[in-house]
Amino acid sequence: MSLDHATVRRIAKLARIRLDEEAVPRLAGELNAILGYVEQLAEVDVEGVAPLSGGAQMALRMREDEVTDGQYPDRVLANAPERIGDFFAVPKVVE
Image 1 (tube, helix red, strand yellow):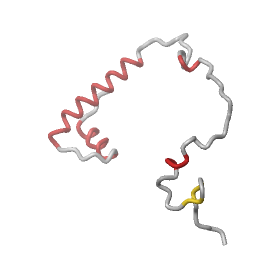
Image 2: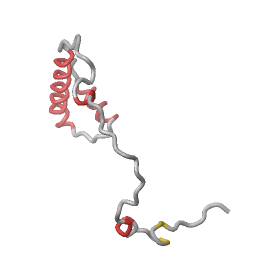
Image 3: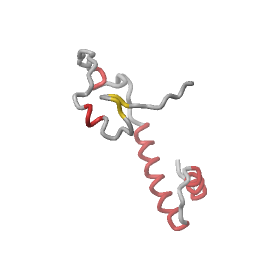
Image 4: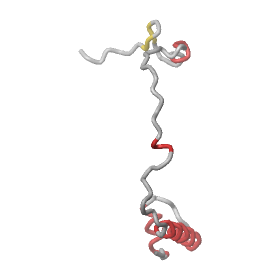
């Protein structure tokens, strides 16, 4: 597949990228090189290869589900506009 200059301009417009006219040939060459690489990948024989083989097949380590306050409430609440003790104070929104 090869992109012509009109298609490159249209892609740039759809992506909302300002593109000078002198940059169109360079960008067309770069996009065509990318598409050529993708076509090379399509030629690779993947018959018999299990999808997501590798790290995705490993079991995750389980840990206890413990509720904590993070051990540093003063740092967490340092930017709070208002606080009550170790909690954020928010205005009442239901009347």
